[in-house]
Image 1 (cartoon, rainbow, N blue to C red):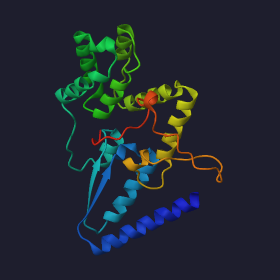
Image 2: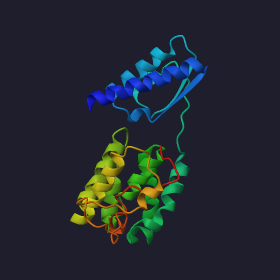
Image 3: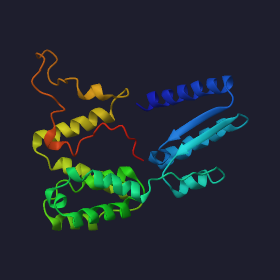
Image 4: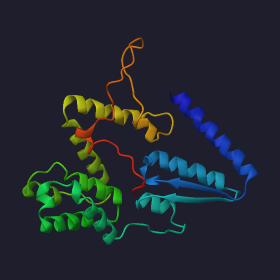
Length: 237
């Protein structure tokens, strides 16, 4: 596995050098740089700087604010892009129809939900969505207020939100739990980009010589839809 990975990196660098020889200037866009592991990110940026030596290479990166990344790009131009509080509040208000009845029938509680989530997410739509979904299984006003009081903030907030989502998956019925984990595995280990057809095509698991199974649909997951990935036309950052 390690050898194949090294060959892949070498081929990538070789292909990039070929482009650099033929084109000038070259623009390289790096999305979600903050999601790269610290050690890998340092090596990656060091290699890019090596390639920049003597060449007209221009970089654009999209990270969340992290001290190490800010230091690496301290001489670069920065443009902060984030949702306004009003944008986030409008988004959360638009999700009210999905929330428990105890929230839907209490306008004051709806206002509290919106204000608390806006306060916690610091302009990140993704975190606003995750915090909103953390309320979906709450059945009492007390549970809702308790969850709102524990909303995490700062750089660890996304990690906490994802851990909560995995806990929700673990709490599903056995068959739904296994299917949810299987879908996440398909996405994680996919060797090619996935599209919406991925969710429509039937899948079969079992013995190779078994007859095709046509009466089950791995996306028939209504009871666990709040824990599974969803296709969206919006790229939340």
